[in-house]
Length: 268
Image 1: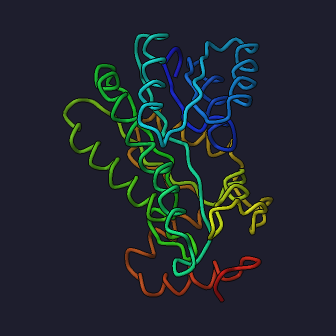
Image 2: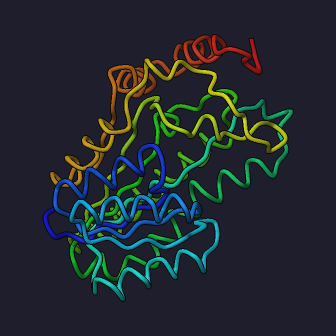
């Protein structure tokens, strides 16, 4: 990634922040996006102190015009784009029969449409550079997770979208990576939406037993450099994907049982 122009959405926490510092460590020049202006500027200043060439743009990825401005700012500063990492994401936790439909729309707007907008506006530059588009998906994009209808739906949609982008451009040198971490210790569960759209506030899972975002970032950057098509992390994640291909009914029961063990699970 030495001297590559890398743009990252959702760059102020969790995997996004870890990706920013990992890409910087590998010598990339960065353009970062997030809704949190204060944290974005703080990260930009820290990276710049460490010698990284970096800009940031306050961006709500659910707004098409914000994504267009983010990409335009990047091109104005660096004159090209080599790597786009669609990382911005939110989660939710509620039974479908109880959830406000607006919650599902909000999750889809961030996780799916945010990636669509940024990819659309960055694609001409990425094709010129024969660069990379990466999407941070989830094992929930392979197997539906009960209590996470909006989240799983958005990740299934993201993976289908990126797969089509890869196939459409397979003769143009574009690299597309679908990266699927397992459960990762980050702010996404604390900020997950409850059935009424309020923040969940406290993670229902033991964060200490999860992947650290720095390890996720390292594996994603390795996969981009090696131009891999898919990256599925953790043994549990790989087994879930594999077993679901051959024993989907069995995995339905296993996933239900596993997710029902969460504290205050919405189903038993």
